[in-house]
Image (cartoon, rainbow, N blue to C red):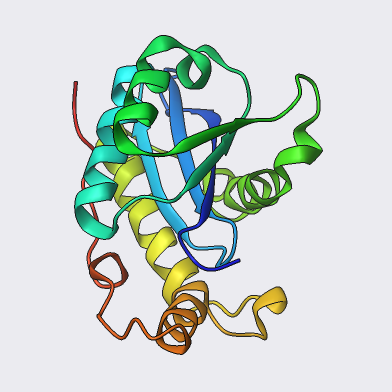
Length: 181
C-alpha cells in the first residue's frame, strides 16, 4: 500500500465549555497514518463531508478508496453520488464491527486522549485552532512506532520519493480551513 491509496473516516464527538455538542470529522491515510483532515463544526451532514473532501482534493488529490462505517453521512445518496463523480470507491465496514476500521479507531483514540481531553474549548474556532496545531505536530514532528519512528508526513514523503513522485505534497506544508455551510 502507498500513501493516498486508502483513507479512513469517522466522527468524534465532544462539547464546548458551554455544553454545546461539537462534531469532528477525522480523515486518516491508512498507509502513512497522516491526519489528512480534521473538520470541526456543530453539525457535519453528508454535504459538509463532501465539501471537506473537495477541499482536500484541491490540496493533495483523493485516494482510490475511503473506508467508513455505515452512518447516514457516509452511506447516503450524497456521498454515493460524490464518490461516483470523483472516482473514489466507498468501502463500508460491517455494522457493529469498528475493528474493521482499525486505523481510524486507533487514531481517534489518540486524538481524544492527546487533544480533545486535554483542552477546554471556548468556541468552535478555538477548537479548530487547537486541533490544527495538534494535527501539525502529529503529522510533522511526532515519530510513529509503526512507521520506523518517523513522523507520518516524513514517512509519506519518503514513500512518494521511493515511488518516483518527487513533487512536493502541498498538504504537508499548509493547513486547510474547513468549509462552512
